[in-house]
Image (cartoon, rainbow, N blue to C red; front, side, top):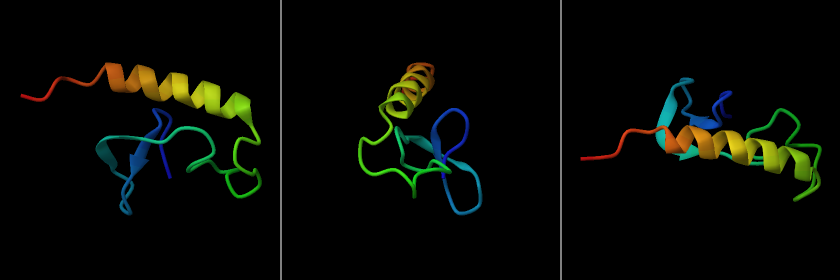
Length: 60
C-alpha cells in the first residue's frame, strides 16, 4: 500500500523512508489491471512520486 505522496507504507501504516510506488503497485485497483494496463495511472503516480522524492532532504 502507499499514501497520497506515493510513499510505500509499512504494515503499521507508516511511510518507509525514500521508498515510493509508481503505477499499479499498491493501487486499490492494482488487482484488476494487468502490467501497463493503465498508462495514465503510471504517468500521474510517477509525477507525484518524483515530486515527493525531489522534496526529500539530502542524506548527510
